[in-house]
Amino acid sequence: MPDAVPAPPTAPPSGALLERLRAILGPAGLLTDPADTAAHVEDWRRLYRGRTAAVLRPADTAELAACVAACAEAGVAIVPQGGNTSMVGGAVPAADGSELILSLSRLNRIRAIDPVDLTLTIEAGATLKAAQNAAQEAGCLLPLSIGSEGTAQVGGILSTNAGGNNTVRYGNARDMVLGLEVVLPDGQVWNGLRRLRKDNTGYCLRQLFVGAEGTLGIITAAVLKLVPRPRETEVALCAVASAEAALSLFNRVQTHDPASIQAFEYMSGLGLRFVLKHIPGVSLPLSVPAEHYALIELATPRPEAGLRAALESVLEAAMEAGEVLDAVVAESGAQRAALWKLREEHSEAQKREGASVKNDVSVPVSKVPELIRRATAACERLMPGIRAVPFGHMGDGNIHFNLEQPEGMDPAAFLAQDHAIMDTVCEVVRDLDGSFSAEHGIGLLKPYMMPEWRGGAELELMRRIKQAIDPGGLMNPGKVLP
Ligand code: MLT
Ligand code: ZN
Image 1 (cartoon, rainbow, N blue to C red):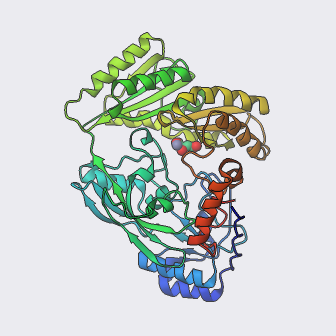
Image 2: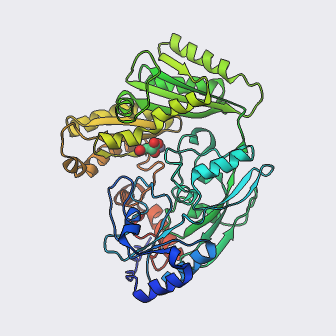
Image 3: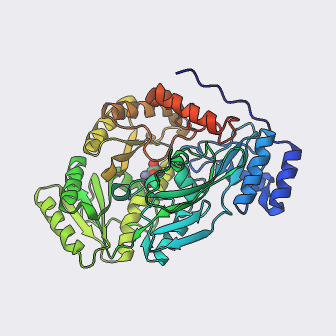
């Protein structure tokens, strides 16, 4: 295949363009004061800081489309931004100030919900939490859950094809999308908000925009699939003998009743110690601290399914086999939330402990213990004193193989080694037939890895798609494609 055509240079926003955008958006819809734009130009991890002349805050799809059309005419690039919770700098503008940020926050309406069709039609700027709440009020469940769900927005979640805790049962964000509304790079609106379960009508365009990280257009609304709300939910925290024991436990639960596994998460002893150290109001409800833990959630919409008894009998058998050392099963909704908090605060606790390098990787589920063992040893060889904090979604093979700086090391000196650390982990991941990017996406952090992992025909095809849909290179430049 021929080499890709390099993206044409984009223009800096002129005063005339900003005036035109102000006329479209009204004064409340355009932020230009650096005090107002500051929170939009830096990512959650504080790895990247860009500059921008303005943050555009359209109130609806028509305003958004008019802004995109005006920018396209002027050749000015746009960075779409949802809750700005990206782990890979996916929503940060360039440092030269040439890109405008387009915030989806005001497009946050629930357009429709149908408990018979089991669909939710929602705008991109609604938070995932708001989407979950809307589903719940209608007696349904939106089975997508991530740590940042109170801030992360539906548009960003779809654009990154987020996964999270329930992938083991329901798949990733991609699997929940029936329809999309998208503003294309020239300002056209594609209304693909269909809520059909069967619709074979040529190329599946919606799936092009899911996971594209805003590089092909801006998702403004979506039709998401819901499921019936569970009647029974059980959550258990288990201290386990090893990562291998956690895998055996997963296998036991899966063999017993695969249809009820809602989540199966792994945590290391060190990760949990960071949570206990840095997060106020949490405690370990087990008699012995361990080096490995599993958090299990089972749920079912079936009446009288007897989940509790089933869970207890699986745990008992695993204890007899020496896999589970101790376990607690939550007795109430509050206890379930408290157990989940120990898992969900991992990222925050790690941030408070010091500088960390994240590796959002996946391997076949059966290889997770080997990944943990081999990557830990490889990183310790690379940098004595480095602290491996593997945790995450064991049930779907996605481990956050995060590395915390050695105690006392200068954080900047540690972060300067990020590529060496990421490459060390990825060498093991490659050997285990895994992926260097599981659920966080590519953003600004990982485009350099694309040629090695997805080079040849695959990357060339991606470049052709980009060229066909966004020939001006105006949509989220610098992200995904190297
Ligand atoms: C999580 O599952 O908590 C996040 O995706 C992980 C991270 O901080 O790397
Ligand atoms: Zn995760």
